[in-house]
Image (cartoon, rainbow, N blue to C red; front, top):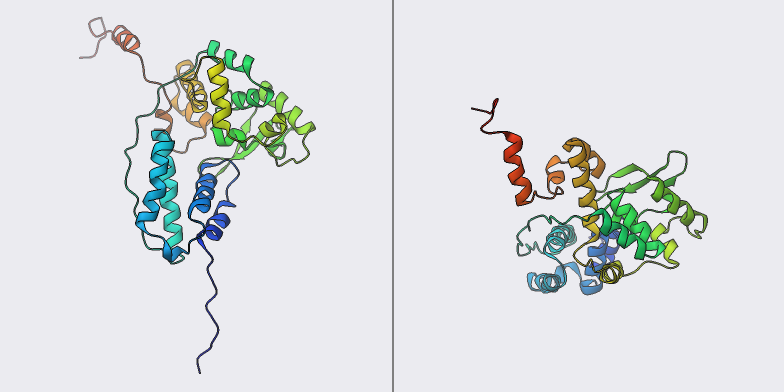
Length: 282
């Protein structure tokens, strides 16, 4: 006689994605995408998912996010759709989006100082982490008193690829992290949020308000990371040093961060290469 034991329920999409999201720190794109999907289609069973439903949600992103953010989030979304097939969802392929050209915007020293001068303590730490330590937005928000080691003067964070990375602190960053650590009720809370006095929500809006106040709305948080990468390369001419500073595994990722040369700088290359002088290449 066959057993009448029922197959255990796999749970709805919300339960599956919430469990998956717990493997990522707060404020990371992976976790944010999983939680956004949970809020939108979490009530469905995996078998109820369809290409129409998946694309309808993706269409909202097309009007909400910049081309690069859309490209990055699509890759995470596609990965999650693959996870859901393990629980009975049909295989779904999202419509493709073209990878945009890397931004070439960098900030001048004067612009950065202007932002720092108008920033609240929380935003000031955020700027320093994105600029001096060249952290991504999510990495800067993931710096906590728990991740800080006052003996080695470093913080240990999980990177975009999911790996743990120990990063030496500048004196400016360490000073502010120490202040946050002393007043932290929860050592696992973001140092930026601690200095803010409450959880830092809607960072994009806060950043827009700051840059609008300074008349610098063309600068995005990620441009601070690009600024440091570009300045480091122009100072050292060592692409490997830039790769290590940014924490990239692939060298090609590093090249995307270097701001392109202006037309005037390209003309200067003609003089440097000395095409018509002695010793010019044949």
